[in-house]
Amino acid sequence: MRLVIQRVTKGNVSVGEEIIGAIGKGYVVLVGISDSDTESVVEKMVQKMLHLRIFEDMAGKTNLSLQDVQGEILIISQFTLYADCRKGNRPSFIRAGSPRHANALYEYMISLCKQECPSVRHGEFGAEMKVSLVNDGPFTIVLDSDEIVKS
Image (cartoon, rainbow, N blue to C red):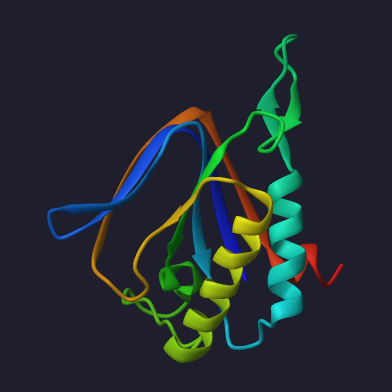
């Protein structure tokens, strides 16, 4: 599982002309899922993400978590996080999870986040989406389960 977590002042996702999810201060999270991922991996990655201290305190230090600042989350499924560009110029996505498996874990991730965060929005799995955001910092963190869960 790969997460690209962007600290934002606002973000939204649209399908067609309709905005289907919008947040203020918080995270826009791009989520890539592989076939080797499990619910256990999702649980560990969500806990790591929710407790990252990447928001500034009164002294300007990154000491506050999403929960400390009552932040919101916008979760977007993005299989392209598993692009393999080693050969040629056309990426291969063979390492991305099958749609059925990935969607089930994506929905599971959303449900876990909703248990701990009062404002969770999300994109539409498999849809052509447009994502807009204002990256705050910019501050972007990449979490890979191969490093987080298996280390």
